[in-house]
Image 1 (cartoon, rainbow, N blue to C red):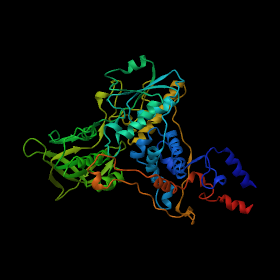
Image 2: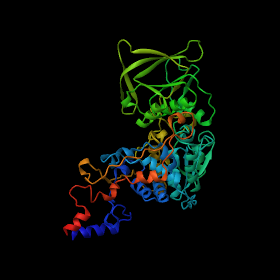
Image 3: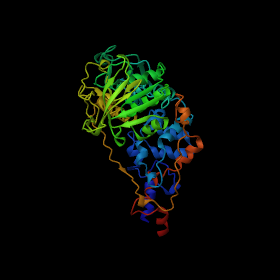
Image 4: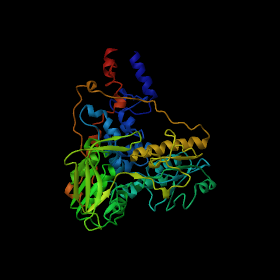
Length: 522
């Protein structure tokens, strides 16, 4: 009877409902599914996916909001490492977790939340309203703190609203998440630059016990080669910001984008929509080592961007002595990254290793950096252009001052910036409460499913690909390319979830018996 007693004792302790075999299942509360472990925010992915499978989209969004304050954003621009690690891949293909998140936030009928009562006397100031700042503000206001965000631009959202193209992330989607956070009680002051309009010391005098520096990298890195200052050469972020504001003059000729990351892909796809006849992209790296994610590269190529790997620009040239008209390249033999993530390369030798091309415009997208003019003088930057912090806690070395996101060097993606903001919020709470500031250690195990563990009765089911605009339509509009699931498609895709955190006890773990089998042996 030991098996039956163990089952009932664990089932009584569990607060998570059983989904697969009703009362005959219980969750492994001490372990994560791979999707949870891979998520920078440790979202309850199985919980919200199964809720969609049940047809309960409102419940799904409620589960998402427990850990994710920007679900509209993350449903569109998250780099979804959860899908890379999804156990379903050993059966056929990973669950479309990001698309299901977008479905939940787009289709759930959600009421605006009530303001959270301020139960603690301390106030927190957050400088910057990007993903890190918004996440920290969300977490701290829910703990009962008074939270004020100071944003130097006139629109909150940081890079989410200033630079990510509308065809990827619409302004309305970002605003939906910001409005939710503001409804909780977070105050957002736009058009205020800390260090120019108000000093860090003035924030302290005004009663802010802790300060979080969460500004993004809003300035493009520039190439230092001959001709870099010629007219017709535009820094990537300047280009994207103009496009986002709708102030851009059409490009009608051939455009070359220099760079191989996500921003470069955004620029190339934007140039197509801005009337360019041809768009080419040149990067140092090989195709396999490009910093952009595979789906970003594929989206750009699908729309007509021509990608040229292993090229290093040597000089920008002009025929008339005015506007740029050409680029001289050298072929790259190999690239490597140092411990700080900085790239170095070697050139190929021999005939054909140099080339010159003609162009009508150039966009430089080789990286971003902090805008020193928008940072308070108190903050010193390291050689990478980031504020030096304790990686585990976000402390800067200045009492009560923390940093997170791009400016702290831990904001490579939106969800990673959010996780950094959450980590800093935990440290700020510890600091104000007088507790030791310590990094949280997550010792959860992870339930991995190996191909040999998959039962023979599991049926292969194709992944529902997310509906998108046709390419010929997509390149003619700035509306979102990804249309999202219809309800029936979302339910069908969610039903592919193995819910491995729940049923790994009885199906996948070697050496353990399925509960039904165990009952037959009693």
